[in-house]
Length: 127
Image 1: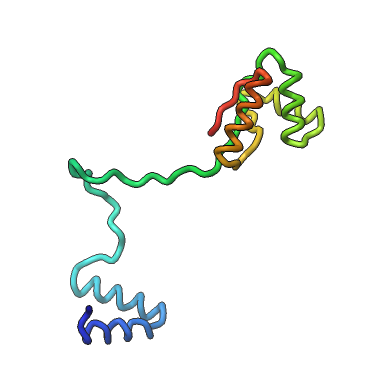
Image 2: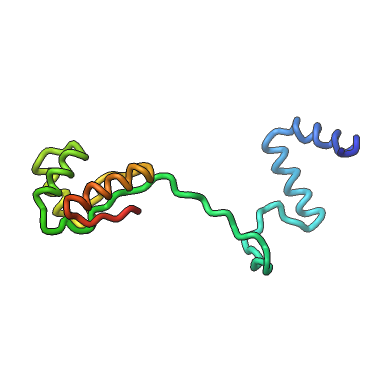
């Protein structure tokens, strides 16, 4: 538990305006020769230290990389999945290897779409 002196100081700081708080920070930095800015450089991890936590990707893009030998089947499937008309679906399929079939879908949906396109003879990546 913090001392009464520290608690009173915290209560006083709570009453300051943003401008006054900024002025306080600058004054403390000058008085004590410190900086309130977050450090930019990070020290190398020590052997045995915990690895940084990686953020798990939750949204994926299904990208057609090759329509294969059965182009018409892939166009029909693209039309069905995307809701595009036949001409738009054909243009999408022919845009492979950079044709994004669906964006920002869950991993399960992306895997299901990939399986359906591979059944139709296409090659698909999940990014």
